[in-house]
Length: 114
Length: 115
Image 1: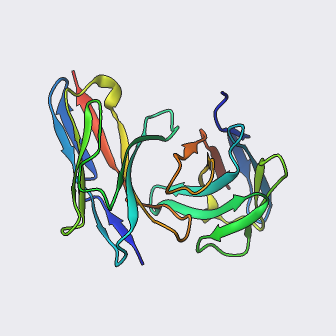
Image 2: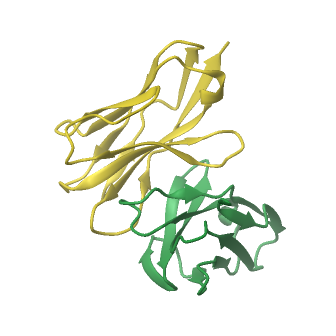
């Protein structure tokens, strides 16, 4: 079975631009979670989608949004980029409830905001 | 709010030796799960071990075992017979059962394995 894939792997943007990151979960997985990883803040939960619905959301501003498609693929969008948005964005998928099912992580998208 | 603390930013161990990584957490919940994740330099995070809070028996996966002390809110990871491939960032994580799908991570411990 193919693992979680994320595209693109690397991205460079300038302040004020917007960006869309993509995540393809493992086949059959319906839950997709997004995390932001930075040296200062560590790993922080952004949001989780299940069957095209946002089931949970972390404490990030409205500039961060996401969606999930009927095939469980997910995208996250960051609008009006700020320097502090530079981070590794990780996507993870699981069959259903994260506490009950192993969560598999993708390799991440490294976003650099100049 | 739940928090997870890893007090050791860096640890090192000799190959074939044993090392223990510390993790404490703060929660008022009684039903929850704890995890250790490993993030090698390639950055793909993988699950090492999982512990259900209602289970008194400590989880074990081959060379990896945990010491789960619920009353003390402590969840340490022991790696036996350390191998070069064990070198990575290790993250302790918590999630409440039946609630938010939000995994709360500690800041991580960087483990170096010396040959």
